[in-house]
Image: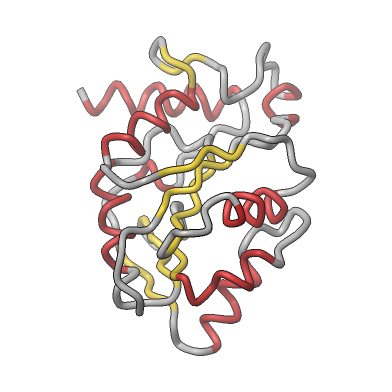
Length: 183
């Protein structure tokens, strides 16, 4: 695999319809989690990782479109970590572990207690496939294609933040409780 530092792509283009339907009074990324907006918490972890990053918030129709746009916006990147903006509890160490694992795999998927999480890492070898993404499926077709080549590294992490996304008001309340446990 290519060496270099991958860029974290923070995806913030979704409409947050499930959050509103669950009773949320604002967009989920602006909802307060322990006094700070969800997206601000995600960006704090990304910035603290020391990795370069790009915020994709242009309002694309689907996650695949958002990923393709973010890859296009970062042409010099040696790889990418795709991180939805609604994962405010992701830990700095997890971002760094996934980035480091891209030196050994075309795709890196963090696993928390057997559940696939984010960020998912992609090496530069995946560039063309990422650029071709459209619709709501995200990058799962790229992961599946690389899995067929035995080029996916599944790494166990002790970071519940990789699977704690904010889609509903109940998710926000759960994240609040998990955040309180850290301190």
